[in-house]
Length: 227
Image (cartoon, rainbow, N blue to C red; front, side, top):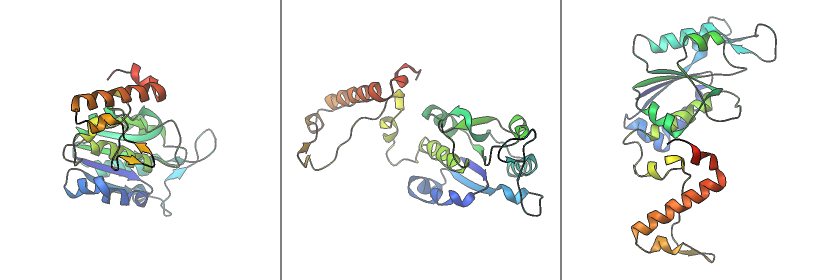
């Protein structure tokens, strides 16, 4: 899978794609991540990419020219499955969406900045808009990195233990169950006996019960969602 990230701040996330699980996925060519500086396509002598919004208002908007030129150049004549704009008013990022996007061969991510981007970019080039949460970041670069991380985990071979996906939070709309490791007793706090029993069926039941309990307490809204 190939991901092209268009941003004003490529250095903000360049290290993320060379470390840990993502770094190993890149080394194995399971995912390819290219960072592109939108300023490289600015026709302004000072490499400006923003301007004041028509109608007034606070802040600046990313202008259409550098963004159009950047996307068209990066896309080239190749097929791109999705051109995604990271923004607060996009569809919420979920595991379901990450799994869907992990099936794509190539996507382009556009990271906004300032007060956003010219609407003509959204109307003409963007095929999907995604939000990583109900809050506002300084720019969409970090959001793009979060999206790539979520997608990469869904690609076969990226995780050393594929079963990790099934025990993650939000799998089957349930939060994760409690986990323990050695020692069996730490500062007077014991590990639940069922986890030491060797009874795998009982352990599976206990974990599911714990997932239901935690989800009911913390995120009851998940229990009413379609899987």
